[in-house]
Image (cartoon, rainbow, N blue to C red; front, side, top):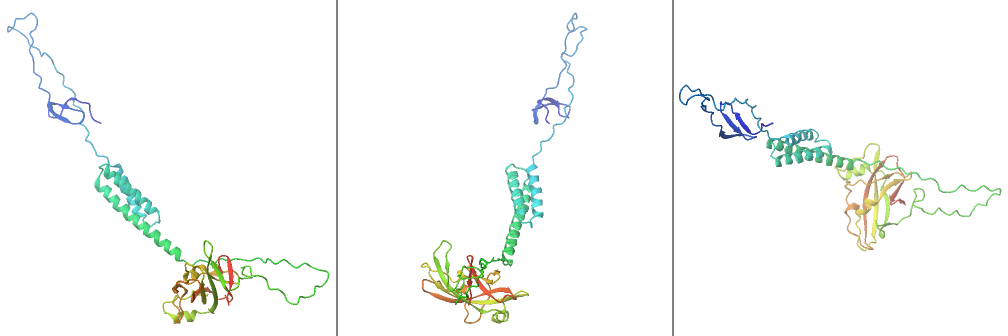
Length: 322
């Protein structure tokens, strides 16, 4: 806290003007002893002199405190930057703390606070943010590539129990087959006509199981084909797609639309990275199909070894396989 403006001893024995913030170049003139003649005495004869204005020495003020530059924001930015750097491998947290550290450091630089602290905070915060973003992206990629458990659907029998009758009914000559309703028990027949997301027919499709247990065949096709996990097997399905949409349709659409299903309702996505044998094109590599154009290709699915009866599944409908 600074002293008010005034004359103070600056430590050299002389009184100097303090303007409230700093010393000036002005010094107080030294006090001189003025003589005064006492009443009743003649001038110059037996006169006595006394100081006209005796000056009492003023107490020396405390030394003014030196001004210190503010550094709170710079220190805060540095602390947050260090914490962000240490938590950079934590998804999202490292990004948030890194951004806060950089913002505090920039404000500190604008307010002319210690530059070195602010720059270190910016570097640490930037490293933390980049590391956290990379970690978050990596975990998201791993999560997206993790195998998805197949959903299990159960179909309750919708057929009512036959009413009991006192009289024996005569057996009909030929029982009518149940109408297809798209359930696992009554799948839709082929050819299956797929509709677009916003309506309108896209393509028709027929399919058959080409190999219900193809582990050895897949390994023989290409040494880089992924091996089925223990307890699972490859099933190879041959598909023929015919275009309907006037704008054209890609055969790869079938690999996204269709899942291989079992009679119990379990469903499995296509294995996307299988290399097929010679003369066996993948559905993903077919040309654009316009109305009337057809393409035959293959898809590979990984299912439990115990599965032996298969259907296709698309848009809440089960489809019969030949």
